[in-house]
Image (cartoon, rainbow, N blue to C red; front, side, top):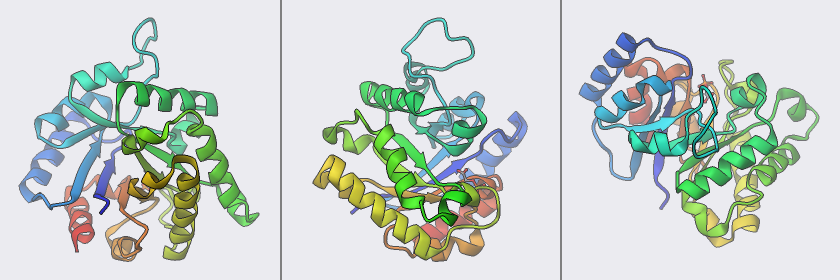
Length: 247
Ligand code: PGA
């Protein structure tokens, strides 16, 4: 059975005092659920604190080189040295706002493989690709490019997050049918690329997940969890999602 994962992507939100208050409040609500993993992807400056609270600390970003003259960047070795357990790769905000192209995403995937760093590979189409009926082909191209050099035996490092761009932060989540169609398509693609172990790779959904739609989304058999932006900023709300995932 695949583990279930609920991941908070705080993006560029929360001050030090707010992050601390979040962690304290969530810790008081939180109880572990077997077969279920909770992850927090804060701004890098709070990673040590998330780790100190004994939560899974994940990095929103990193650079693929191991060390050197790369002002402002963080390496996987540095992140591992402070207790970071996973990273995000290919989030649409990094692809579009920070111009992360295919070559960079490939280098990041290769760096994760080298460093044995688990990663969440994000993929998602824009509304125009969906309107043109090209969403499946678009996601296939994204995944094919990102995983070009990824070896089948490294499958356990990989989690996939399907996050349609039009659903991120818009309040308009994808429907259960749209998520299921895409997840089945991705599963088939990964089975062709990586072989039978692909069925063990967890699949998340991301894009306007909230308490109102979580029960529906988590009832999809293809959904192993969610990557949550806006609704993760309130610890009470996020805890409701944690409970919905275990229901
Ligand atoms: P959202 O963000 O939940 O605010 O839509 C999801 C994400 O970008 O990971």
